[in-house]
Image (cartoon, rainbow, N blue to C red; front, side, top):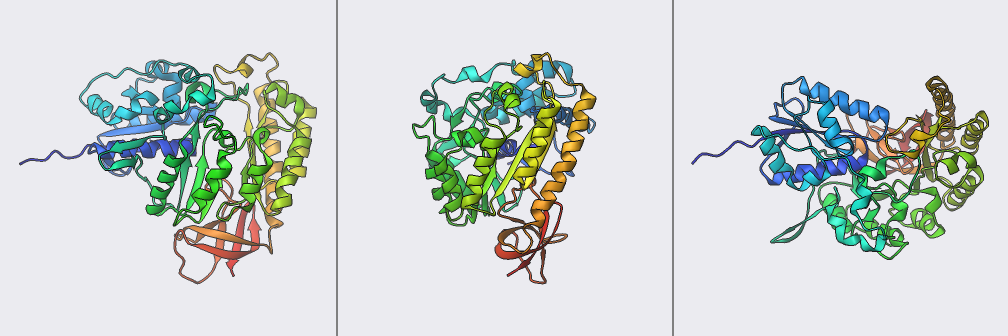
Length: 464
């Protein structure tokens, strides 16, 4: 009896943590069909690249990665956000890709790849506004929940099964709680290719969280396009407040972290839950984007310096050492020097733990792409450079202010040196902690530590 060798596939993920979750769903589907997931130093039969289509630089990185993969001589398949967003256009402009597949191809990804290897030409998705695929009313959407990437639970003879395969051994993992967005920010194209907002079923989330804990995960990082909206389509606007304690109670989970919070949708009960629930870290990833009320209105967003400072004060009243991070867009059409100075002043007042500064880029299909008062690129670059320098110094000052304080840290890696993260530090974005110790520590273990020094956003700690 002869056996067929498994098809080797290299799966490369670009972009955000939500894409990481989608890749692990794809990996599970391929693994279930007998494919072998390999590393980049092994010889695959096929390379699948999960692309990012958010902003201009991310799209460029995705294209460069596809072109580099093509140089290996191995067929390259593009999936993910850029593939969904541009579909047939991308396939036409990038013949180096053997195929471009969209989100609707994910359930049949194994079949699609086999057909590509057999020489069949696959039809790329036609670009469309995925918001039109769901009912207008949020309460009518739950029936479509499992159709979203990263939401699937496989129904098997043995009962429901988590459709996910871990692609690393890190002690933290992203857990998708929702997809899509109902907001209409004038700079953002994400709702067009990710669709309207839809929550996952809480039981599915809890089941996947338990599965992650069984597979060595100690920290859950909750991700979505807008976590504050979780539950609005389930008939409960405070569903996140109910979900967080249940996640924190799962055996093996040491901490739960929420990301992608909309300032305009923050509420006292959610702040209290994040600050006061054991096992949930007081960490606030708030999407401020700017501080000028006038400019925020042009973005179709809400708030401004005073509103945001009030929110920060409310958080720090409950948890003085809470981590607060945000991203900001510089050079949005019509941004005056006064608007820019208002943003810089806000950063000085806010004393955030981590700051991302991005220059505005024109995105196809967005309102802001057609605004007449676009700023010249050189001016945007100058403002990005200046504000980034200011932000780096302010983040460094915030880290210095933590010297002498106590915090819990979780070890992420021990080679070549021990690296951990404090409660206020999200994975890969907010700095890390170097532990001064001669003890033999284990990846994933949690320790109480004292901050003794800082370098930029990074801390040096000693165990207590």
